Amino acid sequence: QVRLVESGGGLVQAGGSLRLSCAASGRVSSIESMGWLRQAPGQERELVARITSDGTTSYTDSVKGRFTITRDNAENMLYLQMNSLIAEDTSVYYCMAHSYYDGMNYWGEGTLVTVSS
Image (cartoon, rainbow, N blue to C red; front, side, top):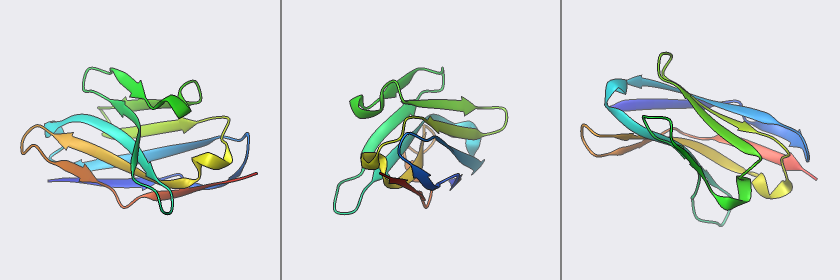
């Protein structure tokens, strides 16, 4: 199993920045891709950014140019640098890891990001 713990959420004004962190533990050697998803009230969970084991990244269109996903394999950490935040970015952000060992996706409990306009 893989355990994920997010941190770094909070309240920020529009135009500001936040950096989310995700600490992975457990069977971390089995992690293939990792990502950040978000879910706003009444909406479906949305994949925001994803990074593969070789460092290839992808982003949903609404965050391209504003968010950056990075991964520190040595420290078993995942990050999401969020700049130029807008009210529509307000959501609970979840860290996700895909394990090639059991084919499962593991999730953290989420961290709330609130952007005030």
